[in-house]
Length: 256
Image (cartoon, rainbow, N blue to C red; front, top):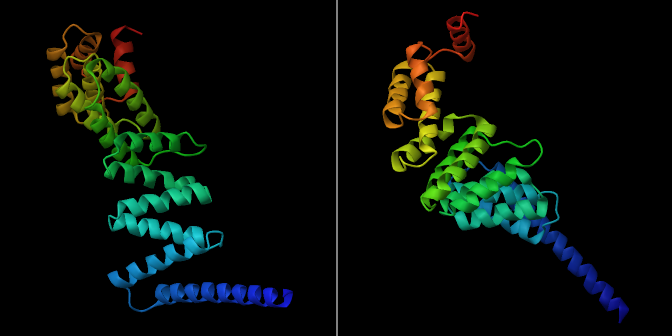
């Protein structure tokens, strides 16, 4: 009896190894084949997924999983791309797949999840958002903002804007600032949004547009300290100047 059991196990192991080797050979043939078109790419990525599913602990399976995930993403098969990407994250602990997962959530209309994944990724040691990812983050942020009550907007935008600026600077935030002061002009954050937009235009040397934005700030929110600061910028020809140059102008005016 034991003899037949051992024989059965041996045959099963041989069959499994043979199947694995044949699958690997098919993958290798497609990877190195002369014909590379949409059909061969589709077949190759199906084999990647099949191999990783059958042999998840094999050294090649993480690579195959992530290749198949990227192919699914690029061909707009978002549900499959998400499943494979989450498998890479959960099974293989690949944290670098998180921005891809965030992008997929955004494309699926799950903006809250998109923001959460980007934020969790940025909390990891040594991780920061890429500039392009920050743009996607802000795009989804503007969508979430539409569902907020007026009294929630100021705190929400302030926190999210600070996060983006800590990652890549102010530039990706400009569409958000524009949305806030155009859509919610009476919100307490709107004067600051307009001022930050004007400051950015000044920093990049766009003096004409920066001046117009500062003038708009003064006209729209005349009683704010930001409007008074904007008037000082205009009166002292500080727009378009560096922070150091602006300080020199202030010191000179004070007679220092």
